[in-house]
Length: 453
Image: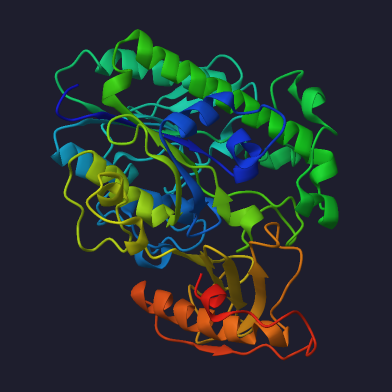
């Protein structure tokens, strides 16, 4: 193995964690991801820090929270003064490439050189969902020339990825490649999830998560196509890993698979995401390759802002103190105990609301502001408690416990943890108004050790 590993980020858009077999999905949609997770390092509780496209991407490119990047809602381009993954890897002697959806520029289609985050090789579109379709894949290259790639969009993009890997592995420098798929995001202009021909029929009516069964939404219309898109993405992952193996670089290449956010199919608000619920915030995440093989299923709650320092650390790149996240590598290397990890993910919510939430090993606690707008305000001076869920007994968040007297001590504890998380992200300390007790004779008293989970 070379001293510096190659690195590939396999980034999907709007993919729920429970589309994967390792999370209990019964449809065999993701045998390649499952194999990668089982043989590598599987992040069981991987939580986005901003459940909407542009802000989440700004977090993953910089390792900062969306309010720190300034791209706290869609439509705000990435601050060109911020240091990105591409720039960290370039300084470390890597070739860098970006293929796919960007969603951090000022244009709808092509992206000016100065807005590309420092990537050397470029084959992308800013708002890919508006300039391509399932069988009409259009990108713009380094010279801002429009390039139409043949095939179903996932396959066309994967062909380009394999061409890049085949070319760059021959050079004496390692490569860092960020691959950003649109799938399984909906196709905006038709409000549909178009899979490859024949795939929708395979999965329609076969399986539905409990939250969608209970809450309805658009899942009856859309779930079959969505799952078909997930299946094709997993086949693309398999093709990529086959290519790495055939080029004899699989054992010197790190792959990180993750997604920007998940999808709740119009059950929690009027559209598909922008919510602190698991269905919007929990995503599939796994690593394989040097430093990660044999890492097993991890119980640490991780955020997008933790993935960036983990990836840099695994590549031998110094993690800057300015990043709020934490690398998992000291634990994987046996230098730190897993008990040293703070199991908490902080979620900032914009557009649909100005909201905040935290997710611990057991609890989900969320607040929303009635005085601030998620479209015009990045944060608020006051919030109201709106939900509390016990993820051990209610993993799909169907029973809101925020008004239960039995769980008031839990909410009090989590309120303080949320305030601390907001302060750590650079936000001013707000007022959080307690929810009234609506169920005075509710469940059993929660034990102190349970509150702390």
